[in-house]
Each structure stands twice: as structure tokens, then as C-alpha cells.
Image (tube, rainbow, N blue to C red; front, side):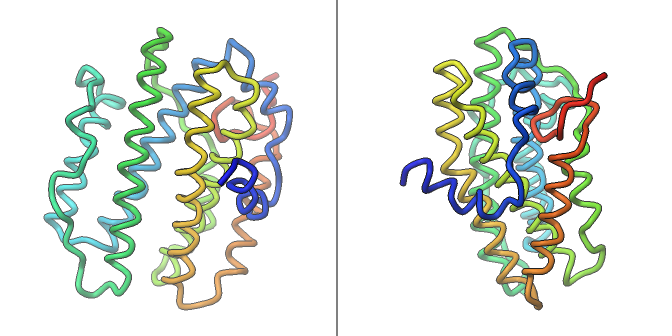
Amino acid sequence: MNISELLSPINSFLICETPQSWIDTAIQPKNLALLLVDHANCELKAAQTAMLLLRRYAVDKQSGEALLAWLKPFEDFVYRKVGDGDFSQHVNLSKKLISKSNFEHGDELIAKMVLLIKEELHHFQQVWEIMQNRGVEYQNLTASRYARGLMKHVRTHDPVKLPDTLICGAYIEARSCERFAKLAPYLDDELHKFYVSLLRSEARHFQDYLGLAEKISQEDISGRVRLIGEKEAALITSADTEFRFHSGVPNFS
């Protein structure tokens, strides 16, 4: 499957394209370090989101503890400055996860989210290696308003909370994929190849989230997809006071 075929369902799903003004800001050399750091943060946050979904809905207590242990070295490094940044021993989950017996879709949620976590952690490691090679230090960044702005529209009670959360996940993954594709032509050879290489897995993540939302929901999700999509588009096309991987139209004056 070529890039245009990969992007076709994503472009159909997203209500708007990334504004050119964001791309123009992102490709400025002075912003490259910040872009890489926030990209790494996004990969870790994606893994954390999937882990939280599994711990809340799909796995027993011991399996939840195994998930926490899996991500701990990455979280220690990013948030607590603990460790040397060598994650080669932490790529894989240490034990088989046990599904809760009272959740019908537990096994499928586990299978898809564990693969997603593994891939996001691998991407995090890849970004970190690129940062090291370029002398980019890991710095603490405030989170963008994007994910928080989306999650404000998730209903707070089950059984509707999980499908809404999965729909948000689909939009975050789809937007990431769209931005990788938008940025790639402007970047140096190493980053161009890297961002293109991410498109396949990120496109599948979007489809996995959306497919799970459709299966798990007890109601038709098309209205929720449209509503959350409109909120996502508003975040992308409105003025933003700080530059991040998922920020909106730059307005830094």
C-alpha cells in the first residue's frame, strides 16, 4: 500500500487539514528540537493512554501491575530524570495479560492495545535516538491543549465513556499520521524516512481505535464521531499561543 492509499481513509476521517501556517512554523530550524521533544512525549502519552484503558476496562489487578512496570522505565526517564535512556530491555511486556471475565471485548482490546503500546514505545525510543544523535536534550514541556481539549467532550459515565475515549484516540492517531505526511517532504533525509515509516502503524492505530469504538458501543457512534471531529477541527484551526506537535494555528505574538 502506497502513502496516498494509507492517507485516504485518514483524510476522509479528519474534518480539516493541518493549516499551512502550522507547517511553516514546524519546519523552521529553530523549532526542530522542540518538535522532536514533543513528538517523543506524544509517543509516550499514546502508550500511557492505551495502558490506562487496559487497566480500567480489560485486565485483572496483576496484569495492571505488569503494565505499570512495563512503562515505568520510560516514565522514570522522562518525568523523573532517572536512567540512561537505554530502553532495549524494556521493549516487550514481561507477562501475559489476563482479561476480566465481565468485559465482552476484553481480549480484542488487550490484543490491539498491547501492540499499540509496543509500537509507541518503540517509536519513542527511535525519536530519542534521533535526538541524541543531534544533540537535542530532553526538556520538560507543558502539554498542549489538544488532547485535553478533546477529552473535555468525553462523556463521564459508562458505558458511553469508553467509546467516546476510543473515538478521541482515533482522532489523535489520525492527526498524528496526517502531520507526519505533511512534514516529511520538508525535512532532511533521516527525518523524512522516519516520518514516512511511521505512517503505516499510525494509520492502523486510528483504524483500531475507531473499530473498537464501533464494536464496544451500544449505540450508533456516527453522531459522536462527527461531534468530536468538529471539536478536533476547531482545536487545529484556532489560534494557539504555543507550538507543539498537535497545536493549532500559531499565534505567538
